[in-house]
Length: 222
Image (cartoon, rainbow, N blue to C red):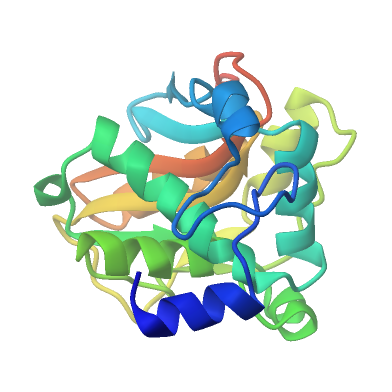
């Protein structure tokens, strides 16, 4: 361990992202949680716009609480272990040479002002650093809020339509895009974003998320 790392660890020890136990440097889980979560990664098969979405963990237990703190309580430091989880699953399913750009699912300007950061954007930026794939943080724009809580599948599908657009600042012609988000539930948000990206000229779009709300197949796009 380098001297600086040792000093930082002495004052700010790493903690398990699931149960908050102190762990070693560059570890993500404690041994107990590693046993529980290490096989919780997976993939969901999509459609012609978004053929596949991969995820690192199931959105439950301590992980759920940590992601909530990361999104809504300004615990940005979680981005470091979260992005390492993303990189591990990326390395398992995908190849760096298969992508030209990373684009995060955006939040509205209002939410960005309130929160101070886009949670998916930070994940995408860190994954870009780990993979070397260029990051287009403003590739997509969110035009209005889309609260999906307690909505039916049909309502969720309708709710995301017209809520996003491809930024005029970027040229996605023939680009192979990796779309990043924090959690996938039905997949409607990511599928809608992928459809817009493909219509903007992208060659392909594949997805990656930190967590999945379950192992169920993606809902069909309506």
